[in-house]
Amino acid sequence: MKRLALVVSCCLLLPGCFPTGDQQEAVFDANAVPQVHNPGEERTQWGEQAQVVGTVDIDGLPVLSAGQAVEGLYADLQEEAGELYKLYRYRGQPGELIMIEMQSNDFDTTLTVGSGSPSVGEGRCNGCVHNDDAGSGTNSRLRYFVPDSGDVWIRAGAFESGGSGRYRLHISSLPRPPAASEMNLQVGGQVSQQLGDNSPLDEEMRPYHWWRVQGSPGQRVVVRMQSEDFDALLQVGHMANGRFHLQNTNDDSGSSTDARLIVTLDGNGQASVRALSFDPGGTGRYTLMAMNSKGQLQTPPTRIDVGTTVRGRLEKSDLLNEKDEEDGYFDVYAINGSPGQRITVQLESSDFDALLRWGIFTQNGFILENEDDDGGDGTNSRMTITLDNQGEGRLLVTSIGYAEGGYTLRVH
Image (cartoon, rainbow, N blue to C red; front, side, top):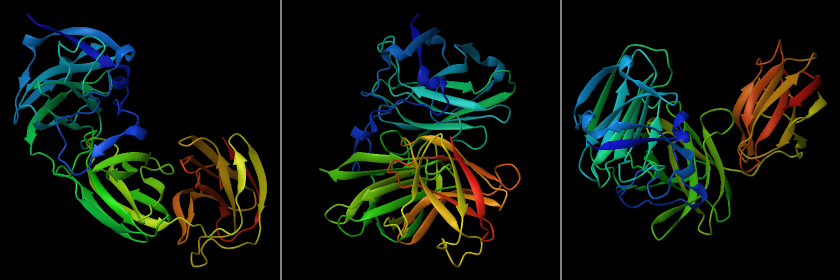
């Protein structure tokens, strides 16, 4: 009887976490159909992070085929190291692209898919990916390339213990994803597109579009991606010998699920940008825009450190937008911190209805990414923001209705 040592990474115990390489060195052939390569293969060997949490009788595992759907009960899930799951095996053709979907109206589902086998040995898991929210509601889904061995291991699980009910697991075979075709976006322009199951896939099995941003040589450009359907991710790099070399990435502009990057166009006035979903299962509509990043702010912002309290006063000054009746007098702050750092900002005033805004200044005006006018007590404001990689984000302290007066700003 063959038995499989079941390996679970510490990473897989965290929802939405899956192993990736160093993003600064990632290289992807944008002109070719993806090869049989799943996330983590040949790049991630979990070694010391991995823990053997049990053994499974391979011969006794349920074997699934394309087009097949199986149903199960929450009570069928076994618990190992804090995880609830049932293990399935899929036998397919090497290079086949499959979609694994787990659905339940009774509990929040999770999927972990990999190509580990007895030959892999302890401490490794090839091509493992994880998802718990790519499907609608509490459902999960993943796309995956069948490796050369033809074996795929599927962990169908529950996000939390103490549940009950039924689930349905379905596997379908998909056509090969198309090669990426470049689309153009002029500086000052805006486009709307759809990421779907027929979109090209990146090296992490995420649907994406490849854009060439065009403007003037050396021009600094703000590229912003917005979506209500999925967590947006932007990547910028350069093309060399038909391959995409990743240089920078962003998936958490402000406190929303939008993304924003500031890029410098090359000597030909171009930059290669990929617009994609942060999650392998994310699909839906998005808007992409490119704007000149030269700010219109005439007065340098006041720089403040995280953990400080500032007292100031709103007085007559330039209006952020004279045509917007909700705008008023404002002070501008630049926050000293680390890229990606999450901070909370509080604005308190007994003189006016406080309003906090976070965004960047461009030649076309202020790009608003987040605002709050009632998150604090009474008429005070409070919001959480993420510091951007380029340090271009600006915090505006302002008021409702052109009011003046004193205020206290806390950054922590």
